[in-house]
Length: 69
Image (cartoon, rainbow, N blue to C red; front, side):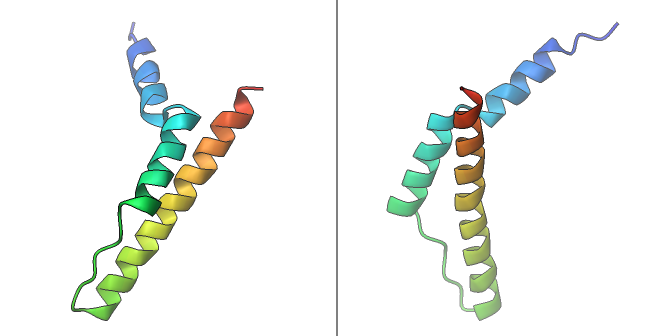
């Protein structure tokens, strides 16, 4: 028999609470900027990943907050 409780608890830890995700959003918006490369396409991809991460943390943090109620 497999003990899967640790894997499930670890997954919940990775997801984190809503506070963690909102702090990530604030840190990214205030302190972090996407890198600028000489290649315009690579810079555009880095900006896309940056925006995706902001929306990802916003969505997951909001969902985690709504699950509290």
